[in-house]
Length: 96
Ligand code: SF4
Image 1 (cartoon, rainbow, N blue to C red):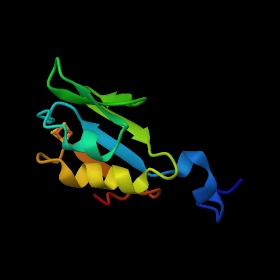
Image 2: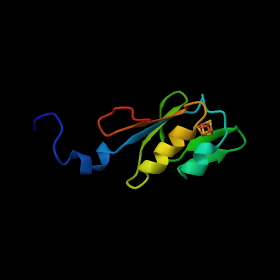
Image 3: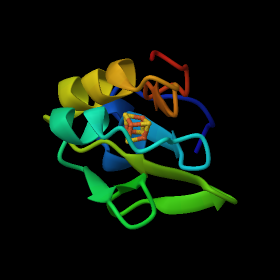
Image 4: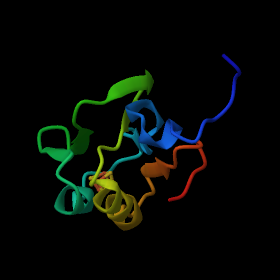
């Protein structure tokens, strides 16, 4: 099987857009929660939580963006006042 992208890769779940959330940077203003319901409030810690994410580095969480949630995810990233949310396309390029 040759390495590299195939025409149908974009249809596979493993090639979806990705969100990366730096919870250390988050200051708990919760604008993201209003834009995308995958972000949840943790009022106790004054931080957002990214549901069903994986901690890839201490305090940094990632997950794939489900089909249909791409716009909401991008809005969540744009409204964050401290740029704690980054969005990557299916090639791994940062787009927000
Ligand atoms: S908008 Fe940014 S700072 Fe505010 S809760 Fe979401 S991630 Fe944290």
